[in-house]
Image 1: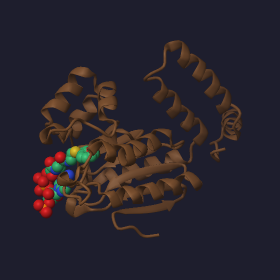
Image 2: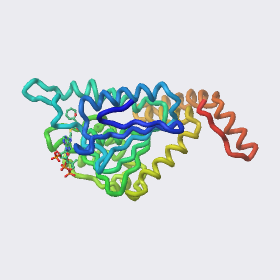
Image 3: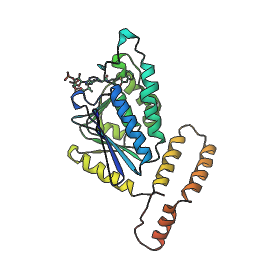
Image 4: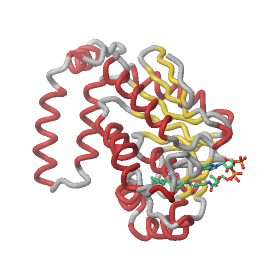
Length: 261
Ligand code: LHQ
């Protein structure tokens, strides 16, 4: 299937979603959201064990396309509706998706584009990339999960500065602050992320999904609730074929072959 605003490919259990409106810095339109919804349904149905999200051209994503025909301020445009129907379901879906999502931030990530990146499980940025909570510059607040993820990742002081000043944060600084996992040279990004995705797709997928669930739940759980959750998720992890394989391989001093079941 071909799309107008994205590219989508599946190879060796790894899916790659590339935002593909480079002339508008891969900013989101209504049609792009529809296409992303379609591929997420496909991801849920197929045997995909890792997802990579990246952008075509010099940018990762500049957030909402401010020129999209659906943003008609004279016709009662409601930004809340766009969040309700487009961004919020997407961010919820990403958090709930039971496979690792790697973001390859190939260039500037602004507005909802920055927060799309931050909603991924592992974020690797090109050294030249920048993160901009651009919202305040146009009279908005960070959305697409930004007000939730920023203080959790970098603390309140830095979250306030990023959101209110709306200044670009370099990839290096983002990594130093704990906003992202890794910075790599621009010409190494694609290869580095491809290797990481291939590796993750060969790992015990159910355990990775359970890690994701547990770490994400920790943001709102008490210590005691979290211990209960660890008990339940460990119980489920240990009932997988991959756990049996992991232990057997360790005892037999060989490399495990995980099947994601
Ligand atoms: C764009 C955009 C863009 C359209 C670059 N739209 N064309 C909002 C509203 C409603 C509901 C829900 O939520 C949201 C969430 C949001 O995401 S709000 C925040 C929206 N994003 C921004 O405010 C960022 C706007 N863009 C920029 O500040 C700059 O373009 C950045 C800093 C990202 C990159 O700067 P440059 O590298 O200097 O590139 P540029 O500005 O020259 O952009 C290149 C082209 O891309 C240009 O088009 P043109 O036809 O003149 O060549 C821009 O107009 C277009 N573009 N972002 N968001």
